[in-house]
Image (tube, rainbow, N blue to C red):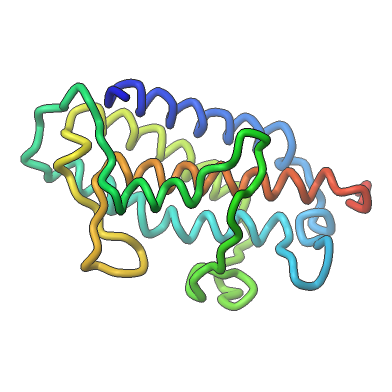
Length: 192
């Protein structure tokens, strides 16, 4: 895949997330935002709080790495590293928009454990983060997606190629957007 095609795909997913957010989530009541399918599941507001926690880590790192990169020559072709491919593939939805592999969220990113992740404007913050991500994708066009490295959230030692890290974060967003859609489409979801 070319670097340009990759960034176009990631931009399309992010724009779709923004559209879905505006169409399906902006007008939910507090009761609807906090409703859960069962005691072990997350509510809509918890899903978005989780995504916001990842954005709070990754977006500043992406912006800083792009801004300070000495690799200002974009390469035509992007090739994932084996570790990077494994990371983003674990997040990517299946063809039927299903989650292929369930994962435990790290405690610091889990809103049921770290309840301070939930704010009064959690859904609004997610929209703001997605708009910021579109700017990051635009700026990423000016650097080498293979040479710029990004430390992952759970270890500063492990670094992914910028292209892999962007895929990881954006596929993660798409995965949890589908989770939030599944909540509001549940047969028992409250009407108001």
